[in-house]
Amino acid sequence: MDPAIKNDVNENRRVFSTLSIGVGQFSIRDKILLLPEMSRRGNHLIAGAFRSFGVNTRVMDTYKGMDLGKQFTSGKECYPCQVTTGDILYALKDEKEKLGEGFHPEDYVVFMPTAEGPCRFGMYNKYQRIILDSFPDFKDVKIGTSNAREAYALDGMLEKAQETDLRIVGYFAIVVGDVLDRLLWRVRPYEKEEGITDDFMERSMHDMATSFEKYGAKKEFDRILDHLQEIIEEGKSIIDPSIPSKPLIGVVGEIYLRSHVQSNQDVIRLLEKYGGEVVNASIAEWFNYTTYDRLREAKRGLTLSLKQFHFSGTKTYLKAMIKHGAELWYQQRKQDQVYDRAKKVMPLAGDHRVGHLEKILKEEDLFSFEVGTETCLSIPGIMAYVKEGYNGVVNVYPFTCMPSTVTSAIVRPLMNRMKVPYLDTPYDGTFQPGREAAIRTFMYQVKQHFERNGRVALEKQ
Image (cartoon, rainbow, N blue to C red; front, side, top):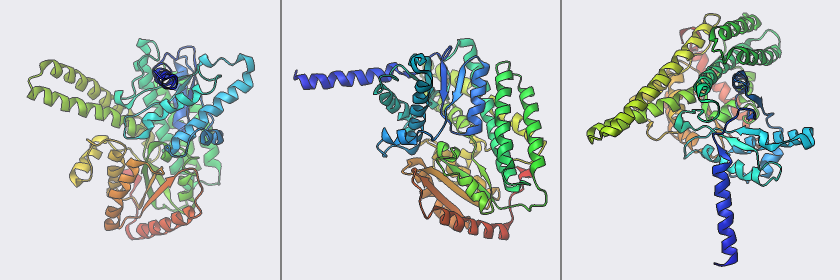
């Protein structure tokens, strides 16, 4: 064999080998687990949940490493890949600078979940593995992952007896984080003094993370909810009751961009600046969807096995149906528990059931859950907002994101016919001079819709 070809073959083997060895579900016991920040409140609460099980967990600083993210990407990747890559490199470089000879890369695990294609999110951790391998100091840093295909199970990351408990507590942290987000968006447009809501929410986030760290592993959820209720009561006191209700805007889109404030250039605050109150789709919605989709898959497999008299397959799919059905029931039950406690104090927007969203798609014949991706949630989420009386809808996503582009193509003509203001806001890290003008125009239309139709009462949700 030609030596050059032989070298190429060996290099390819090395790359594929590191993707299998350096990316996966590794034990995080006695490791430093680094979490990327997506939803600020949700991720800090998840970190608190991990710490309650004895895992040294940190949320990485975000957006400080954008120069590094751009340096090691081409710009053709999905925008969140640039952001998270920069966050990882910045965090590791910062650790090495602070610790010097005391920095041991094998002590670190970067947590980067994944999803199935065609979304490029499924390739982030593989690409980031190749980048880390290009740094001699970071080659031994592991990338831990959890797959949407398995409904984000945490197999192999902790002792077997604790894996299920951690997933339960982690999901609970996600829901509580969603409620904190909804509290922020409900209070900030009506705050008595500018800026006090942000200060209050930052303090509350850290307090709730401590609460999860203290009570999470014990699964003392009532104590956590008692603390959440106190926070909501304090948040309610910040509202100026003399400020009249404002138009209500629903946000959907790609989960990272719509949740990551720096990446979407704080679009929610900008919508508030021009007179709106905003409700963003929840983080828990995606986790419920992955469990729901595994249940659908098991039902489909069971039906086919019965038709083919494939009895071993029937048993396998029946067990999967029971497993994922129980998981979905439990997730929805815990979600209801959190929202019910929150709504006793003040009206907050509820969350959409994934089964209801699929029903909307079927009734309107707009899309199919068989195709998958976040399009399955964004399209019916928009239709649900409209039916609930929202005054406008914004679709937030990375530039060139396929699922969100499909959403726009299907929904935009529908919104025109229904006379509901609609806005696409794609982002790629650049600051577009016409972005604020587009939002101001959108908000003018939203206010017109509000004057004609009023708005939904959150108390009814």
